[in-house]
Length: 617
Ligand SMILES: C[S@@+](CC[C@H](N)C(=O)[O-])C[C@H]1O[C@@H](n2cnc3c(N)ncnc32)[C@H](O)[C@@H]1O
Image 1 (tube, rainbow, N blue to C red):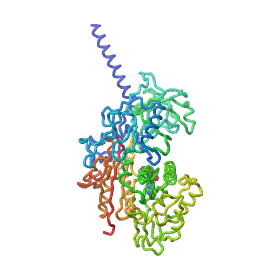
Image 2: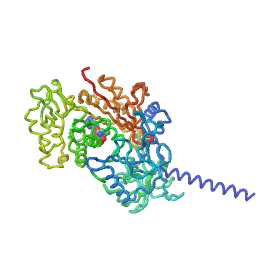
Image 3: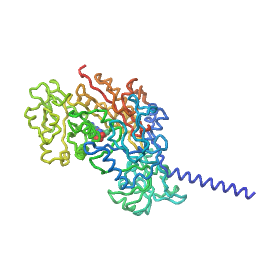
Image 4: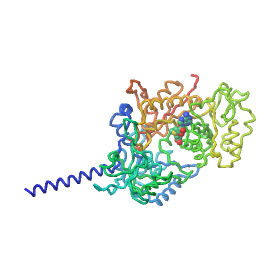
């Protein structure tokens, strides 16, 4: 009888130990659930279906399993860059682990499958892969024809981390902010401002478990983390009011670079160096400056979709920090003009810095509100970007194949013929190469300053940026509108409930107003590419619907390369009864929709390309 009870007790004991272990395992894991505003969630479920949206939602909480690097082919080759990157990775000891559960649940390394069939994404066909499967090197070249200058670096994860936890024995812990955690998941260290809370008695050199504080809802204050910076973590469930909230939100283990007091006293610096990460991705911060640029694959594809040619005049309407601007300039072999504008002064400086680092001369930057990008009639004055014709019926860019201002368009702009003679030759060799037959006063002032500041520094003018009052209608061959958006495709993302149906609608309105400007600025026969980094159809397919219904001279154009999936067809009624219209049958294969839950494992992204016909028809 006793023996029987002993057996029961022992089974119970081992069962409860196993349960305890399982609970601990679940607690000290990374398994977040993305929170959405309920109406937004309902809308996305209507758009994608519950199961698909759940996969997208899960994928968004994880980083892509590889880093994507664009090589500056004007400075180096992908083979040379790969050689240097291999050496850098070997020196840093990165890449010793390769297990990776990809976002679609399969256990694999970060190998992404891209197949193209008749211009559309297809799982069945097997045309090409991003990587050569057999080799499995940590760094490999993109296999898509024309994109071989893109290099991928394999990451790994999710890894199970041994935090050294035991029942009743609290870990030394640090909680970081959501933004900080999202950066750490992409390969960053934990910097001082990102630390929100820390256990007592943490000294420099201690090993700590790092978790993330994700916003919780409270009746009084809406969404918030519910504690102040500097909170002491008690560690035990009984004494720690935020204990349960951290379940499944552990992003790795690190070594403190400062004591607890130091972390909360300092204003900057590395607080924790991560030693064990849930996701392991190489950080190429400040590496091979000017030779490579870390950029998401769909962003590079957007530059290709624009299909810019040497000698053309291209406008990048929302350009900072300049990722797509520089990609476009390189595709143009630095010949022609890429006008890169952004609303923010400091961000324009970022574009200038990047262009200078990459050695690109065809980029002209301005601070400009893209909502006022078309300049008004009779506008003159200082600091305006002026394109003028005095007594001329039209302006022709000699290089081009393309750009002409009609008499009607040109009459409002005044350009003295002598201006053309003032072109600074050595300075803007690329412009000379284009044989552009005009130059604006603003260009001349800018060029004179460039000469004074010496070569190479023409993009960093002591923190000052040129303001623009806009550009004449029909003055660009191609326009890229990489619109500010809800960014609901960016990953990793740990919280999404801040966006409501109303705020998403506001993004859409803003984008339509910008698009209206783009339509005016591009010449007939030109091209507009519209892109966003959101999964929200209201900012993607609905914008395309607006564009095609409003401007009959616009038509959707095929894109190359085409590696994204099709767009969404139909319409959707939202919770308040308003109906949103998307694409019509036949249009879906002309846009590219990058789905974060697809095997491509990219951010969520959308690209539409429009051909511009005769505007007066
Ligand atoms: C999606 S980001 C652009 C990223 C950029 N195209 C790249 O690839 O590096 C959107 C940019 O739009 C800018 N922006 C927002 N509103 C703007 C406006 N009204 N006029 C001009 N730029 C604006 C923001 O400052 C931000 O830099």
